[in-house]
Amino acid sequence: MHLAGIKWSLFEFIIVTSSQTLISAHNISLNHHGKNVLDKVSFELKQGEFITLIGPNGAGKSSLIKVLLGLIKADSGNIKRANNVRLGYTPQTFSPNPFIPISVIDFLNLNQKVEPIFLHETAILTGIEGLLSNPLKNISGGELQRVLLTRALLNKPNVLILDEPAQNLDVNGQMHLYKLIQDIHHQQGCAVLMISHDLHRVMKESTQVLCLYHHICCMGKPKSILQDSQFNDLFADQMDDLMATYEHHHNHCHED
Image: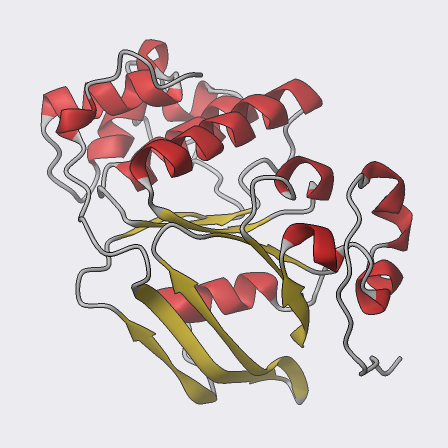
């Protein structure tokens, strides 16, 4: 889906300087049942950045997102947001209640007031304009991901936080969704923080990659991460899909 022809004047995104830090995390630690989920995690998300958060299953990625959103409270550390931050968020999993007869358009309007014209223009952008009257419970997984992205955009965010938005989509669905996210990032200049396992599809777009394994084991420009030894250890089974090269080093190791 391309953005040509969309009435972007309807998107009254907040204008900020390109260097402004929108969200900063400092020494975030989280413990669950005696195990460190997050261990002194620190990073910044600046206006216009596209940070991809990667790491093995159980590494604490979704927990970090929820701490940033204020959905769960960290045991220590602090989160700072710029005063003008507007968040758009898509969760990792969402299952419509099959017993609640709600349409897509009613779901998009749920608990928020949205101008009808803005809603319809956003639906055109994300390619769901033909689904608005459909029961939410009847749409496909790929359609649901676009509906969730639409709802996130209705907040007119300058920060998009996406937790594995292409999960369970086929290859074609992944390509279309990532292209849409990239177009939104380029056209609107909003910051994006996205968890993804589809490394070969998101590396090129990312301005920075953050590799998490309870702590930040490495972070840097996309090509640099690909030659990091710890990154290679964590993602050895996916390396055949990765095409770039680059230098990046750190000198610590993970315990088994």
